[in-house]
Length: 310
Image 1 (cartoon, rainbow, N blue to C red):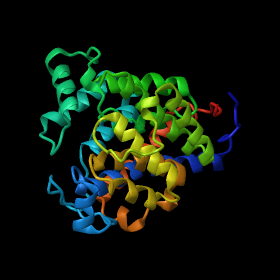
Image 2: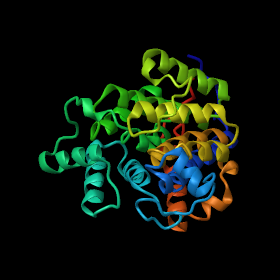
Image 3: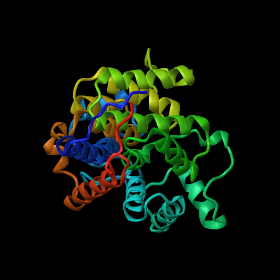
């Protein structure tokens, strides 16, 4: 492992702040864009939209244009917790429970089961469950990545601990850590080849994540989710192209959109996020995301002066 020496200057750290903002904002944009076509097939999307390129709302949840779903809402629970009290799985679980009790529009079945377990029994992790290999933990890991910048070991521990509140499965764990690592690399300005190598290392350990050739499946199974995310992130050339290609695959499009939006936001940076998409989000949401991302970077090991180790 090599210390890059990056982010020791105020200018470099300012760039990280922008990329961190783009990470959380990109995730929300992917959620809002993809929710319109969640559970649709690619052919159904083509028949109705040609190519979905605009945030228009609707979908099975009948959302307003720019409205977000559980992907963003659960991420915000984690980000608010980290920014307020630091690392506390108990506080995160409490925020999940409060959110759940407020009748959100959508909650995935595994998240629902895990939050109900916490409410009823107070446990912060359930036992291994073969049914926990969904994408509900991976979709919300971006704030953890920002809060652990420059410390991969801390990322791995926190990413898995937040995941186990609702999902306890090695494939979910591996996806959470990989997404976090890609965000670390993107936020610190690493080239695309470095992010691809990181993905390939995980694919070597977990061959089921292999994304080439792409099988074209985009379900809530975390393997299908990660294959979709990795394929489109590594085969496109801009933030907008990446998100449009991903969500037009359909399936669990709000979650694939949210995950790839976080990774692409970190890599491409704030300037690449389409302004016409950002304007569709609630201004209060955009403002809070900006504030939270800043707090997370400042609290991170990187923000506290620890050098980046790649």
